[in-house]
Length: 340
Image (cartoon, rainbow, N blue to C red):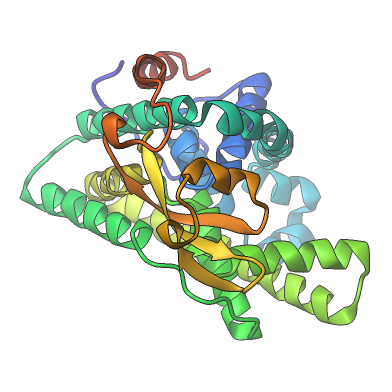
């Protein structure tokens, strides 16, 4: 692994990633987005395309219309690194489909091993980023600490009640899309915290089964929020990368470390969402055997409690969990050796 991480905010001097590499990186991001608690931004970061992704997205804006009129579509496509974004998007769609079936199956049958793999992967990513920072001084340590505290506080929040007010819907889209930009922050989890996860899923399902104007407006406003958040936040982070690379990297490393508790392998259900009564309830008030929660479609786990293997509500599979964590940890350094 190289001793320093080169942070660029333009694609001109970035190391080219071959087309197949772009697709599989997108697939990895897509699979990560399926898992609440895991961020596609983390995958982009450790696979070496994070800065390039930021640069491409931050170039999307009103100025493209002027470029289109003066120099045509080819200029616009080049400015936004179109080939890169297209291949990445194709990979993300494929990865999301694989994730829905493949990773969902693994979580249902080997949840502890899956969480352990990502736990090891993210922990190694934090160490990798820290080692890559040019100058670790008092300011960078403070940035690292603040990032960790903020991420922990966000991911430890109790869920709110969903709201179909269009302004709130727009804002929830802006916040959720941060998963593509901030390593360590899961978009699906942010929607869960805001109480919008179930509301959005149900609205999309209802619209697909019977299109209507109200649901179309709801989905459109949420989508606009996602687009606005993506374009705005990408510019902000890209500018920080350009002007304060060490502080930005330290903050992002802190974000990853602060959110890692959400994917601790052994977690007992704590708070459930009762779909029938449309409210949050304590798991202990409804179930004596937590293993039954997964078999009951009326409940969804929205918060859990990290525990040691001895206190886990079911078989801890300690040997498999440790092996998976080690594999995830080592994979980061394998990926950092081969960025192509």
